[in-house]
Length: 144
View 1 (cartoon, rainbow, N blue to C red):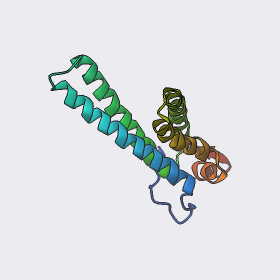
View 2 (view 1 turned 180 degrees about the vertical axis):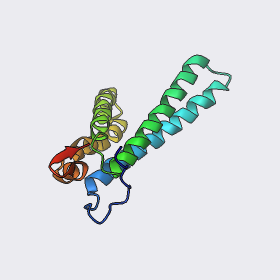
View 3 (view 1 turned 90 degrees about the vertical axis):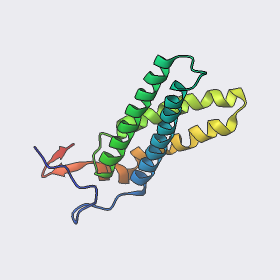
């Protein structure tokens, strides 16, 4: 089994491109937002106005798992793995889809808060420096 690379670039590794740092920042902000929502759902479990305890527990667990996935993607992307690019791109596409109803509903500020970071998270994984940073080679073969 191959050793897991260090998150700190070594002497043979190029420094992390700004695109990687941008994607990681966006994913960390989304993880913080999901964590705050999870705490909110846990708080509603113990309030008197709870509509569904089971629904609140389910959403809290789902959001905690989402936070764990986002943090894992950030760690692996900083380490130079290429697999986090695809799930982060899918997440950003979902945020774009969720942003458009806010524009038609009359809340363009919320729509922009969802759309602008998602646009950066969609464009950055395809930039040449990010692709070069996340593609590893071992002699003549490309590795994950």
